[in-house]
Amino acid sequence: MLIIRGTKKLRDRMKSAPAASPDDESTTVLGDWFATALFWKPQAALLVNSQTMIPVFTPLAPAGKLLDRAPDAIAEVLRAHGVPDDVTAAERVEMSKVLIAPTNDRQIVGVVNEFAFQGEGVWRRHDPDLFSMSMRLSELILGPLMSRHDTPADELAAFFSNDAAVIAFPSAKAAVTPTPRRVHQLKVTLGGVTPPIWRRIVVDGGETLSHLHSIIQAAFGWHDAHLYDFNIDGVRYGVPDGDDWTPVKDERRVSIDQAIGNGDRKIRYTYDFGDNWDHDVVLDKTISAADIATVPDCIGGRRACPPEDCGGPWGYQELLDILADPSHPEHDERLEWTGGTIDPDAFDPAEFSGNLRRQ
Image (cartoon, rainbow, N blue to C red; front, side, top):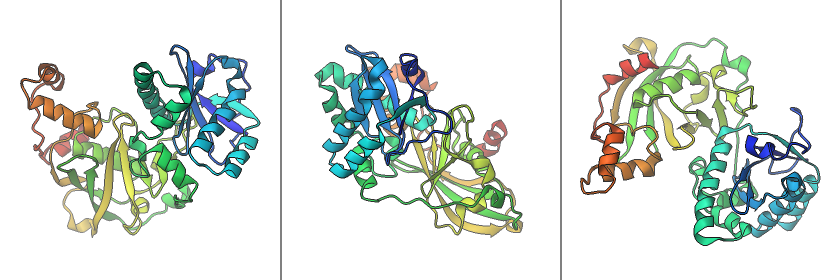
């Protein structure tokens, strides 16, 4: 069985399609596929795999038969990417029953939207067939994959070479087990930006990942205006959403002590799934609570936090270049948008306490 998780605008076109129940799960190796309707000329449907983010573009019409046609379109793209024939055939067998369901992962929906945006640009310039566009955009570097294999094509290849590993984390019951209070000094570095932007913070290990989110926001000067999650050795943590069944573990049930472990776990904090501000969180040292004056605190750092909604690392660099060039045609517009000039080297740890109060 295959579950296709469609956006509302797609589901509205498929009101008579068989719907999945909350207990239904995909039995395919690649799991669920997310889908949306693209009202181009002619109209198209876009499917994105939840595991590998491989895109599949296919005609939308007739929308009522999309669930019948989707398995063949998916199998064609998998074969073109070199997925073994026996695996593709097995996937096709498992997709003999296809059900529609609401989306349940905002990060994947963000990827769907990015493919739709990029695809529309390619469609208008080059007017390719939908299969060729599926293959072309599978080479697109995606923010959510930059800590893995960069592109959906590479992620798919790694998926079938058993290149991924996921660890089990302590149970929710263990998360609330009393432990001696420890204070951790962490270095949080924003990825994809040169020269590096980083903050050094101290946090109470008995607090939760939700608390760590607030500390990182205050230390950098973000405004907590977007979605986020923690990825710890391949396991995602955030705030579960009961309305859309968001498949993340509850960050409020896991302490910072547990997340850090012995300091050898890879912790990545991603803020804003559109701009994809990825932060690497590394343990500097663990100290006694008696040896530190203020907890939590930001005790060091370098360079200013980029403005919200500036387009991620690439967009931030472009913004700085435009602001530095008064002759650039967009200079005045960008200057008005930022509310004045930006000093990319500015950093004042004294701003942390005020930022934290606002959190």
